[in-house]
Amino acid sequence: MGPYSSPADGKSANFLDLISQSVSIRRHIDLLRWLQSDVQQFLPHDILLTGWGDFEQGSLQHDILSELPGVRSYAIGSDSLPFLLGKFHDCWTAASRNPCIVNFREFEYLLGSNSLAGSLGSALRTMRSVLIHGIRDERSSHDCLYIFLSEDEIPHAPAGTALNVLLPYIDTALRQVKHLPQQGRHSSAPPQNAHEDVFGLSERESEIMAWVAMGKTNSEIGTILNISGFTVKNHMQRIFKKLNVYSRAQAVSKVINVNLDG
Image (cartoon, rainbow, N blue to C red; front, side, top):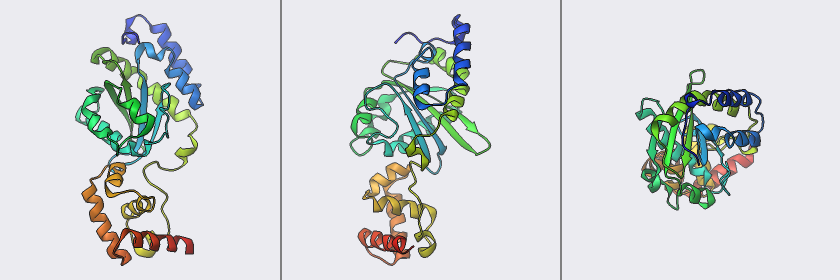
C-alpha cells in the first residue's frame, strides 16, 4: 500500500470525485469497490469493521468490508464481534471520541479460540494497527463505530486528518446500502419469546436464555454480550429461581415447551 495522505496533499479534485461517488452507492459490493478505489489513497486499509447500536448493552449490528479471503460480515466466529467492538469503543471514548490509533497486538488476547474463530480470526491476527473513529447519532442516542485495520503501521497525523474529513461520507454510503439478510435481526440479541411474560424474565435474562438454548457456555455468552462470565452465572441463578429448575437442561426444556405452546 502507498503512504497515507490527506486531501490537503494536492489531491483535491480526486477527493471531490470520491465524495460525489459516495452518494450514489446502494449495494454492498459497490461500497466495497468504492473503499478499494481511490479511498485507499487517503485511508489505506485491509479491513473495515463497522459496528452500530447500543454499545453499553452490547446490542450491536456489524458489517465487515474487505477483499481478504473469508473476511466477510457473517463468517464463522463473527458472532463474538460485539465483545471486540466494545473494546474498540472503549478506546475511542477514552480518546474523547477523536480518531485514535492503537497497536492491534494489544488486543490479541481477545482473539483466542473462544473468541474469533475461522478465517476471520486468522485474518485479524495478521493486522498490525487500527485506526478508530465514530459518529454519534443523537436522534437514537447510539454510536456508529468505524475501525480501519491494516497489516502496516498507520501514521497518526495524516490518517486522522483524512478520516475526519471522509468519515461522514463513508457513514452516508453505509446508511444507503441495503442490509444483508443476516442484519434483519440483531447480531447480539436473538429474538425474544413468550417466556418473558410467562416467567417474568427480564430482557437480559431472556437474551441469555436464548444463547443457552443454542448451547453457549457462560464464558461464551459473556463474550458475546460484552459482560463477564461471572455476571452471566449470576443471571443464570436468578433464571433458575424464576423457572423453578435446577439445571440448564431443565431451563431450556421449560422455555422451549412454553414457546411451542405459544
